[in-house]
Image 1 (cartoon, rainbow, N blue to C red):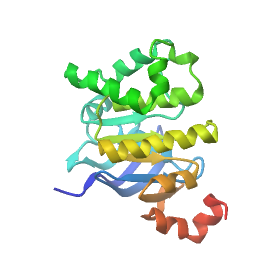
Image 2 (image 1 turned 180 degrees about the vertical axis):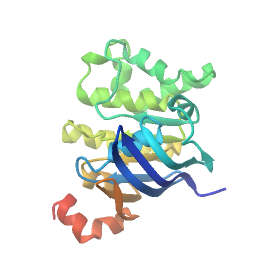
Image 3 (image 1 turned 45 degrees about the vertical axis):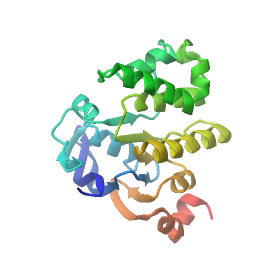
Image 4 (image 1 turned 90 degrees about the horizontal axis):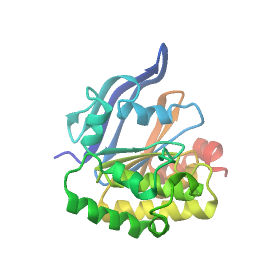
Length: 238
């Protein structure tokens, strides 16, 4: 069995006639957290969307050695790939609990779903307090917690996270990233993290890739990336 959960090979992605990704190659270790760094417009969000089949793509995407680049988004979700999009993506007119049930819509194991309700409420007690509250009335931080929790209700093998810190207060971000680390350690959920805040991302991740205009220009362990002079100047601020 390969140590890599996800393998991306010569991945191209486009919107209409505009090509955004130009032959990406990278891997995500089973049980690991990998960060994709880059400036706005570098193609970070498109990378996650291409893995999920949400845009036009060419190239190989393998999940545990099985090609998924020829599958539709719903089929990829059923294989255990959960996507937390930028902007939260919660259903604002539904309650917290209804949002979480939607996250488990592909599952038939009622006992397991009940266990996972308690699991996510254990990670995010604020959601338990607000389980009957409409998602649209939650704070930004609580909506991000709900988006992550809804993805966990799938019981995923791979969690794709797009800018989870965006628009949130520093204390809320610290809390959410701490919980994400616990989820990775306890549930062994692998994570692919797109994050504008490079310091945050590198503190959480064990490996990272730097994306510039749709091309990978740097890769290595988080410690190696932190020490790179160009990364320090451009993204880390020292």
